[in-house]
Image (cartoon, rainbow over all chains, first blue to last red; front, side, top):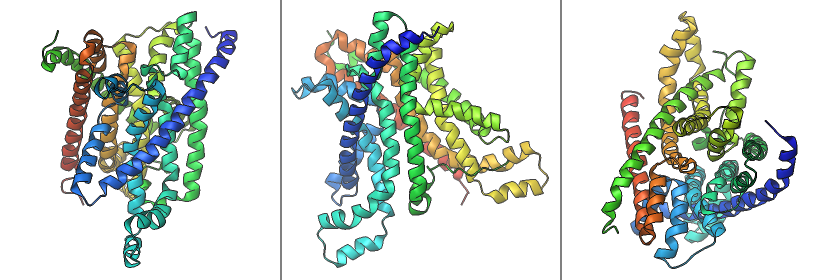
Length: 235
Length: 217
């Protein structure tokens, strides 16, 4: 049933594909971090012309599947805009755009946790708006949300197999290619699953520790509901 | 050749049926699994806690698409060949059940301790404690996160396209293959379909929330 020799034979190929998976994750995360901040700022904007369309776009992206968005970008951009991007570019743009809508919510919780007096103080000091954001609000809003951002990094890592739909050769597509050559299904797919587990589980433990160290529950009331309490209760 | 985008609708209706079927069964399974495994993780017996903990971590630690592939393509090697619908519903249900168990667990833990003590003081049986005192309070807390999960679940059903189930995404890709020049219209229609479904579910959850929390402070 489980052939160790075969498993060892395909391991190098899977590991080299893992690099691509991780690269796509980090690039997508970079796009999402920047995009999320832009969305978060746009939604808070005083101008209705900025705020309302941003809200609409957020709702639309959040309510449609990543797979379909990626397919849309990959197949209809050449037709609509006349630009054809590589699978990798489309993959990180799609992944980044999708998760920027989630990260914008995380930014929002961080920004809202900054005491109102800080805004008022910045106004009193006659800071221009960009300086209020850059020097006062963001330095206080960002550190508490780092663990939550880390969680989303793991979530994005687990979503990269979807990019195999647009022929981005990451772990899953590599496994699929191996299967189509050897007709042995069990080992490749199981090993892909194990590889994902091997990375995402320790990473999530790490983030849990980070969360505890930063004592999120006290600093960020909005996030307190999401962090799982470790206390045991005997019913 | 199609003359307008409305010509694509019949194929989309067929796909919609499959998507909704996977969604509905997947949601039912996910809900059952969430409650069972959420309660198991609060069990007094360490073996029950550990076993469910392992299940939850495995399904949260790997991605849904890989679980789907594993259930559909790899499991037959072990002599268990699943029909497409069963594999899809199992993958979706078990994946979202693992996330849901955390919702159930944390919501139950969030019920103030005094409520447990009061239930014990009133000499209620363990079953009565849970069903009459704790659940009604925990359930209100569970609704918003479960609503979000439902929307994620609908979106995730698009992955069954990979095991060639004829859902919305699959139908759209078939249409695209046949009418390449209509690519962006077909894919936009697909996006709109998913948007309408998840926005509808979001609306339903909000109504339910309002009803459940009516009269509560």
